[in-house]
Image 1: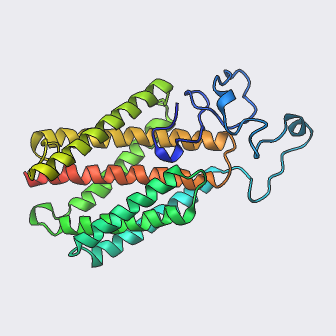
Image 2: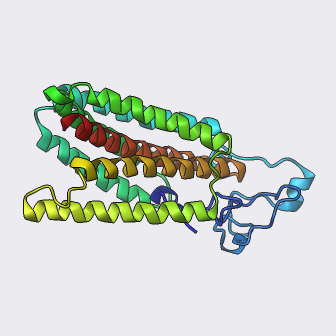
Image 3: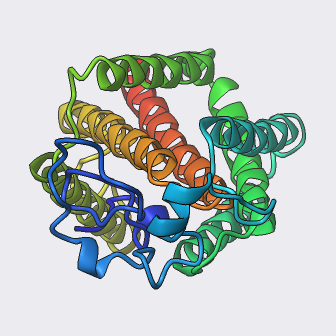
Length: 286
C-alpha cells in the first residue's frame, strides 16, 4: 500500500500498516514485515543500510550525505518551507491583491512544480522552495482579496487560526494514539480523498461549461457540508503524514528525505487552509 500523499508514494516508511519499511533491525517481539521483499531500501539494495555483521561489530558510520534523517531535520526543513510560503503570502497580500490573474498564474506554476517533485525519485530543495514561494503568492493574493470584502473581513485570519487548531489537535490525537494509522485507516483515507478530488473536478467542469455554480458543492448548505468534509479529510491526511515522518526517522530514511516530509506537510496544510477559508466564506457570506 502506498502513501496517500503523492510526495511519499514511492517511499515505504511504515512498520505495521502494510508499508514496506526502511531496512532496520526489528525490535524484540515485533512482527515481521510481510512487505520486506518489496522494500526498495532492503538489505542488498539499500545503499544506506549497514551490514548486520558490521552493526554487531561497531556502530554504523555515516557520511554527511548518507546519515539518516532525524526529527530535527524534518522540523528545520518544514520551517524553511513554511517560512518561504509565508514570505510569498505576505508579498501576494501586499502587492497582488488587485492582480488575481497573475496570482492564479503563480498558483498554476506552483501546482506544476509540486507535480514534478511528486514524480521525482529524489527531493529537490529548489523545486520544493519554489513551490512554497509561488503557492504563497497565490494564497496571499487570494486571502487579501477576500479580506477586502465587507462581509469577509478577517476571514483569512480565522482560516489561519483554524488550520493551526486542526494541526495541533491532530498532532495530539496522533501522539496519544487516539488516532491509530493502520492499513485499513490508510485505505479509507485514500479512497475518501480520491472521491473528494474527483467530485471537486467534476464540479469545476460543470462550473466552466455551464457558467453557474456547478453542482452546488461550493455554496449553500451542500457547500458547507462539502467544506467540512474537506477539512476533516485534510486532518486525516495529516495523520498519515505524521506516520510517514515517524517511521522514516525510525527506519533510518536518508537525510534528504526530510525535504519530502516538509513538502508533504506543507501541501496538506495548504489544503486545510484553502478548505477552511472556503468554508468560512460560505458561512459568513450567507
